[in-house]
Amino acid sequence: MPGAKITLPPLTYAGEGALENLLPEVKKFGPSNILVITDPILLDIGLVETVIWPLKAAGYKLDVYTDIEPEPPLACGEKLIDYTRAGGFDLILGVGGGSALDLAKLTAVLAAHEGPVKDYLNLTATRQVEHKGYPKILLPTTSGTGSEVTNIAVLSLESTKDVVTHDNLLADVAIVESKLTLSMPPRVTAATGIDALTHAVEAYVSIHANPTTDALALQAIRLISGSLRRAYRNGRDKEARSQMSYASYMAGLAFFNAGVAGVHALAYPLGGQFHIAHGESNAVLLSYVMGYIRTSCRKRMADVLEALGISTAYMSEEEASLRCVEELQRIVADVGIPATLQEFSIPESALPLLVEDGVKQKRLLARSPMPLEKKDIAAIYRAAFTGEVVEPL
Image 1 (cartoon, one colour):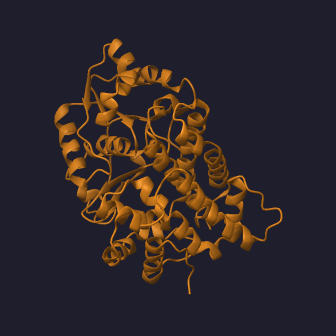
Image 2: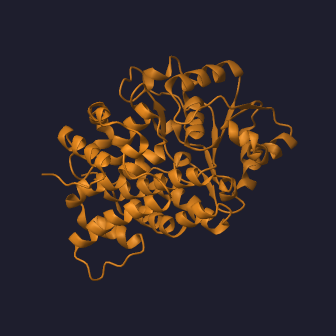
């Protein structure tokens, strides 16, 4: 068996003061025309100006592009790449949450290729990524997606999601500065925080987990357990925000290398069909998927429980794994995310189509410690609808 492959982005600055490295790093690329891809609300509240004013002061030409959407549809990506191809840009700067960063990675690479985005999607690819494209610098303003350190760009299709994935999508520079996350409202803090937790938990139980990803995942879980609720209650808690930024970064590295599985596979159709935010889609499914696959990874779930701050000293692995599911439910509830599909106004009649689209996510499902077939996926969606954690018959 070959050894574990560990892939890291070329350069990351993380922690207080990381933003000060933006101008020196931009200078290294010597750009003449920079495209800044960002969320429109971040432009409105002045956060983008905080990021780019040193570049303006240094005389760089900047074009700020904000025509993006949460959970971006394929058409959004196509439009941005057409814009980039026509604009003569030579450096891409992504500022925002996962959607903005994914689109920045996507356009930096595919704008240097021929053909539409759909030709490069995982499920329907007819072309291959061949070129590195334009250099890209990514600055997350949320603590959850880990997009700044992964090689994946996610797009929404008619009823599900798909990805473009290639190491050429990795950022040339990632800058993880927690002060850029202080303006996140509670709902976004909750959704992105549970997204990071899901990344860490799924990476830890993945069939591709290894000692490096284990260390990253468990430390991310420890930090999230101690800081997510605080950041949710008080967005100006700088210590909590700092811990969540580090947790998101580490969870991103963990899942990039070990992979995510059933939770994400089943979350994609929720986002595609009902436009539920990705973090909330993960959150509503997390305990039901982990409860269903629990018997395949009891020891690992006991480790997760320890990382969540609950001693397992007097528990069997069976008891600890059950308690882990309960604790995951508690964290989701504590940050105000609904516990069932019904609470997201998803009708029971939608379950069959969710199952059909969930089954298609073979890239993700292949990493689950318990094989998940159509009947299993149907049982999990049913459990998430009724609110009752179930196990295989």
